[in-house]
Image (cartoon, rainbow over all chains, first blue to last red; front, side, top):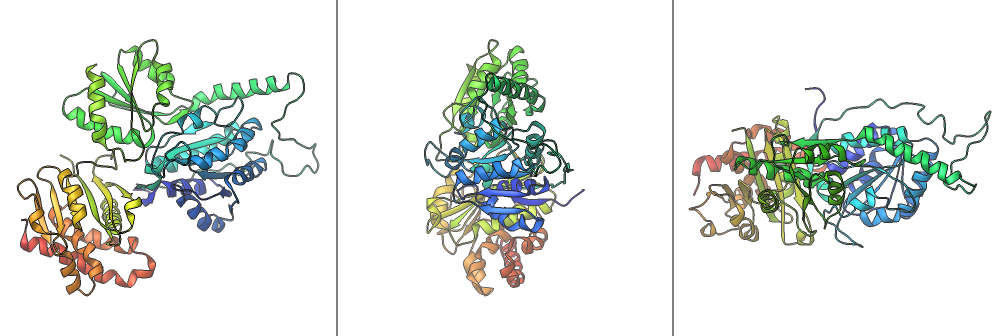
Length: 351
Length: 186
């Protein structure tokens, strides 16, 4: 055994991961079910010489994040669905300005104010834009509390590597559940933003960070550069395969639902059903090629989500023309259990 | 078969079901096992039932949420009504018989331990430790982890303000375990 394990909530693991990754500024505005993150940061970040700001609104918090990362500082904001909607303008500006902000969304039910329970209703918003304009976020979908820690550290690294905002997409289940984690300290590069950040122009020409490109052809050139970056992000694709090799049916599910489905699959395996799980961990870039490999092997697919069907579109794009994916959507308002997925999986298997 | 146990712990808000859920899961971790703990809050929080689910396993844990648990710790009547039908056949039930009529237990289907948790806690000087009595009973009934590990975990889950109550809580855990050892199941 190396380091002592800690017993923490998913929300706390994200905050701990951010501290380990050298996050120096947190900006936020309270909303359930992610309040443990600002609570933790308000207590612990100042001890590490960082700054915690409870902003006057989500809009302000996101723009403070934009400002902090412009200075090359590792910084984050967190919220839940309705609050994340309010942050979209600044997220689009960060994408356009190539700024490495880290944004956490602990997804709750929607649309509108919805409820305070878990949901995966923000998949589209996270992976397809959310704000205006032609841009992408790197989107990480942790399924365990350890992953929440690990992927938060990764989020900061990726944000600076690609100079692009990164979103961690969890939900109320992951945020509220407790699990042991083994903390680890990554190496934080000291001068990672030296080449581009705003730190005072004494002794060098001034720099401009902006998302406005009015000159003829300038925006096209800029957007092509962004596109190239998004293509390079494919190197970062992560996913988990569980008992897929001999499976006739692959269930595709991410985050909390992915781990709950894993229990269903264990139960069904004991009954002799050949089912496996494919759990995307990066939601953008999406692990399309790995899914296509499975589709070519002639497997059937069922996508399970805690919404009415969003990721299923990415799965369908990935597996066509070799396969079709069925879909099962769990509705908000009640906590999904492994039992809920037995019947849909058997149905898809027997189809 | 590798070691595995899951439990729903339910009672009134204020009976300390979240605290013993936390304690059990923390102790499970200290015993070197994988654990998950998930609380269920909601509009039912005040006055109604509060519950949490703990999973303890040698294997990697999938779902932290369980529909048909292998065991239950039931502190009040509404919780028995809600969760007893969901308990697995031959599952283990720890029932707070101080507050719930033992005749309501489906004795044929499940293995039930009736523990007068409030009375035992009272006799130790504080009714509010009924939750610890119930957890002690649970540990003895399931043998999922040693009682000693649970007792040693107390300082980690009881807030610093209440650290002086640790010896009494430790005693309450033991009293629950002893009761089950003496009386056995229904």
